[in-house]
Length: 257
Image 1 (cartoon, rainbow, N blue to C red):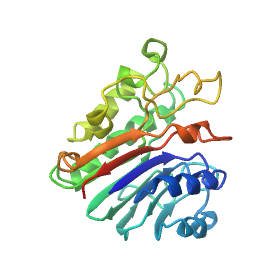
Image 2 (cartoon, one colour):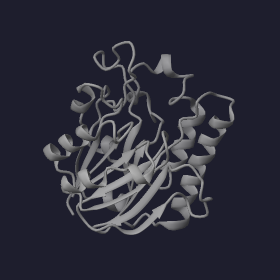
Image 3 (cartoon, one colour):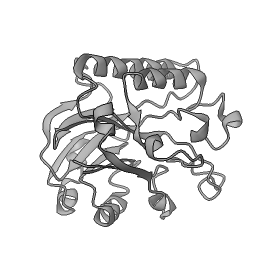
């Protein structure tokens, strides 16, 4: 079973990239973030024609938005945290697919230190940890993926000293994300890859992609039970080199399921 996550930065703007990449890589499940469109404008027909017969999405105009595209039936669909208001930002979608509970998230950016949006980011990560505490067991086949908007370790940042006091790599953010990981998650990319210099996001400016000045902020984490079934995990840089790309690259994991 091949599962991929990709912050697409506008699904309608980059639908061609999604279709071409999916045709070449054939994921069984593709989780998207930052779809940036209301549900009525989600390109359902085009994606179904690409082989994703089962699709769930949760979007809003111009911002946020998450979706799960699958070749297997989607069961027990959930949108946002339990108890969220109807107008809550669209940042989480979860479903059971082929026996795996997949939680697709777009963690808040945080914007700037000391702001309400930064506090919201830390609080959102705390809610994410509580969500797993309340709903899942480490023996379950559980997968958390998406744009987590934090680089966990120095090996996930092209210049740790430069980024130490910047958004995505500050100590409060890393501690908040580590708290989520301590639920029992295994970072399956790091399980398979120990080398530094592997990133999933590069800003659009200063030739960052060409110079490989990036961060690894897009992740696939699993319960220990599912990690044992992981056979490979990698970041596909190729879509980032396309014309008018998303600033993120897909992360892909394969499981012997």
